Length: 181
Image (cartoon, rainbow, N blue to C red; front, side):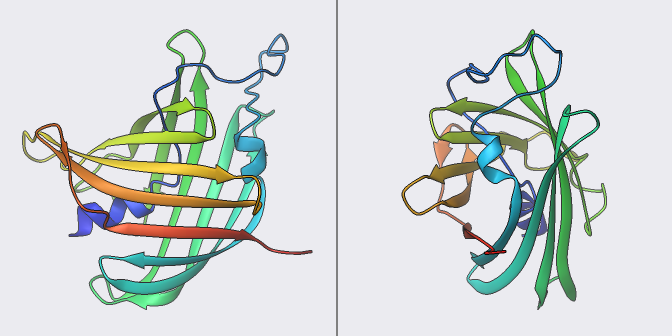
């Protein structure tokens, strides 16, 4: 259960179209027109393994626009970990391989996941692929889909397992709403 909730902290992003974006990358920095919509402060409402929870996410470009820093701070004590959820993701892009690279750290540590994932983009979606358990050979992936919804200026994030190539039930459903400043 802990490993699946970990994907909740996998904030963020993934998919099937291997194009980064349409912005000029001649300056060597990581530009992404989709992820630019994620920059800012967000209120989050979520259902994680049947448990309703809220949190706040702060997102900004760092290190000369090479990484997107995504920091989630939970408001509620999660029953199975006895504390609020907290995690940080650092999202970069590997230009030669045309894929997002995500480094994640959380209150879970590194026992079941080393915090390194890949993601791909398709239109307004990013899909992140995470091996579910590093301690055993497994055909289980956690897949998190981040979808930008421009009409409502919000993000919808869903996580589900994929076992032996078949998608399972959604175990995390998050809605990000921009904080008005």
